Length: 68
Image (cartoon, rainbow, N blue to C red; front, side, top):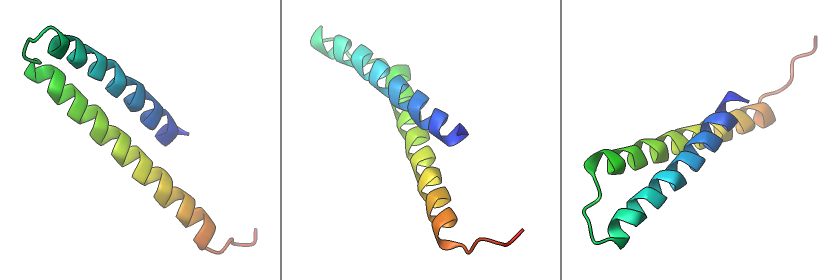
């Protein structure tokens, strides 16, 4: 559940920051470095979260279940 929240929050955060950067570019102003860094951080967080979800899913599917 936590990985899903990380992916969702970083996805929304990325698109919010992308909109801010687009506004700067639309006004022919340079995009602040902090804004670009924020986009990179949220993209990385989403990628790590997605990879974590994939690993978790494959682990659950491929490892044999233990009898309790």
